[in-house]
Amino acid sequence: RTTLDAWFGHLDVVLVAEDGAWMREREQDWVSAGVLSDDWKPGIRDVMERYVDRLPGAFVEEKEFSLAWHYRRAERDLAALRSSELAEHLIGLTEKSDLKVMEGSKVIEVKPATIGKGTCCQTFLARGHGFVLAMGDDATDEELFKVLPESAYSIRVGPTSTYARFNVYNEVQARELLEALAGSE
Image 1 (cartoon, helix red, strand yellow):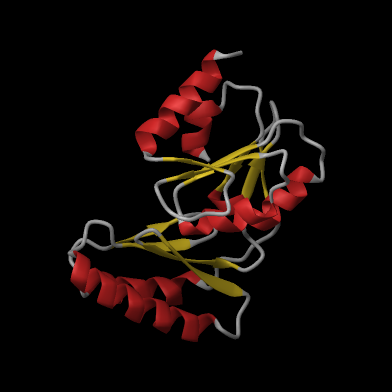
Image 2: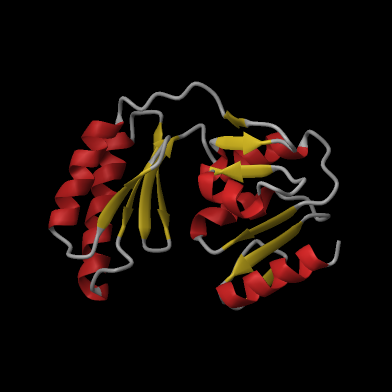
C-alpha cells in the first residue's frame, strides 16, 4: 500500500493492496479487510526459510497478512524442483487451516483464505463504481479477472491465456497504457 500511495495516492481513485487485504477509498485512509491473525507466520516462515537455504537466490517477503517465497533470481531447473517441493509441503501444512497457498509467477504465497482479489473485487463492485480497470501479470490475478463484469477493463500483462478481456505484451506496454490513460483526463 505504501508503493500504491507513492504512485497513485494523489489521484482521485480507489486503491486495493495486498490481494485485497487493504482498500483505500477516494481521499480516505487505508482500511484492512478485517481482523486477521498472523500467529501462523512463524511456522510457515521457518519452512520457507529452510527452502531459501536449499535454493540460492530465493528469499522470503513478509507482508502484513501474508508470506511470500520468491524464486525469480534462482537457477531455473533447481527452482522448478524446490518450488514444487515447497508448494506440496505448504499445502500439506495448511490443508486443515484457514490459510491458502497461492502459486504465482515465480512466487509461492501463503495467506488467510478470506483474502483474495476476487473476494475484494466483489465487495468493491457492490458499491457501484463506474470505471473499473484491473491489470495484472500473475496467475493470482486470474481470480480477479474471473469475477469482473463485462463493463470492466481487465488487462493481463504478458502473452498467456487469461480470463482478462485484453492483453498487453509486457510491463513497458502496461506503463505506456497507464501513462496514456493518465494523460487523457
